[in-house]
Length: 190
Image (cartoon, rainbow, N blue to C red; front, side, top):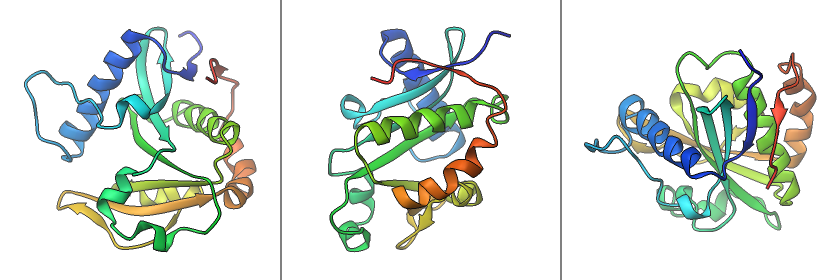
């Protein structure tokens, strides 16, 4: 097996695979969207998303995206979002975390998170928001995300609004680095 590559998506073939993995994850696995015959789900914020991806050769095996423009998807789920946020901070939203089955243990997740944090720091974001699936709250807590506000979403696809401040991320960064037992190839910070 060749080393995995972690990069910012910038090729048409990568975006096609992103739409298919988005469908597999958020239609088939987490029933957040209605099925469609083409097996493709294009995120409503696609044109503003920066996708951090993991590749095994040319095959997309994982993705996560960051976006700094409001309204966030969380604004649409939690109308009084600003009431929960710290003042005078540069906020982004991290979304669409998806890793193909069979790749969910090992270096894919830590490699994507490392590039995600580098991307957020390069853009001067100091607070990251997520809508954390209730199926993975323990994982998000290990990463330093802290819950706020009520659960959002529908039955079968509920999410907990969570945030991670730069200060909290720095506390967790050393602990998180322990998971990186190998140095994955990181390309294209964008």
